[in-house]
Image (cartoon, rainbow, N blue to C red; front, side, top):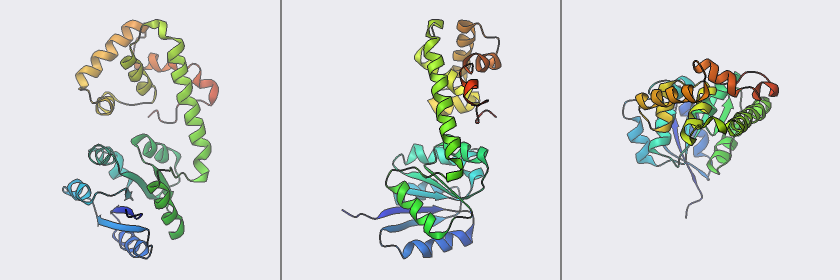
Length: 227
């Protein structure tokens, strides 16, 4: 069985794409199985290539409609996405993580660092710029606080599905995003939210966030993902 990591380069920047093809072709454990810019047929090309790692250089392309990063995960669940050449903005990093990116490499990374990141992501590990390590720890602590708060307030009678929705609401997801994430219709999400408001006595989404962020606020302020 081959030990090569199969890599697909989905890069809008042609210069970066061509440079990476040259760099990766010199590594015996990495095999580029496809490379292209975005096109209507890109998902078909990607699925046919069966990569283990998809390297992307455009966060806008990854997370904006039609949410390409999530579509890659849906159609090629075994592939892991590495965002490369990214800016050092915390919000961008967190949005990439929220959408399911397994790695994030800043634009000032060396070729050796990009290669190491591909190998790590291909081995099932996550790659995070050191400057964002504290951000991830804070995010994890806040998520845990929300879940603990939901458990303590289980007397409100929220079902497991409704608790999932509350958590996503607290993280700033829209009804459309929640529907996509949970494979529900927007109408079903609206009905769930209506029941949550009735059960909790909250007047609106803002009141839900306020109620379930009570513990989280003691851990460092507002959720970094609330938009």
